[in-house]
Length: 156
Image (cartoon, rainbow, N blue to C red; front, side):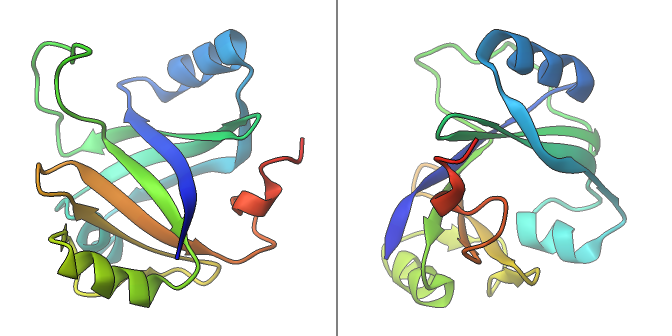
């Protein structure tokens, strides 16, 4: 069962600058520390991007999470910024209560996934997939007492 959209993600060329902006402009606060990775085959496989390296942080304001990434590898594709009528987000995430069941159900609905099964990171299980238009969607299952759990959205 899907229980809600957990977060929206964006990629920036300057993590510190954009986090500062969202803190000042919208009152977002970091949840946990900045997480970095490089040369992590399990993450590359899970997100469907080879040779990835990035820093990321989860921000929270009210009942909204925003995950911000600064990839150092591979290079971003250059081009005009997206307009409101253009397609695309980096991804959005839905929380589920049984990721294996939802993974199979969503495959049946036409989603394709970057990995043959969800990544199990202990307190979080997750997998990235694509909708029929190619938009990236993450499905995740989070233990109830984790900082990212939807049950904690109403907490300060």
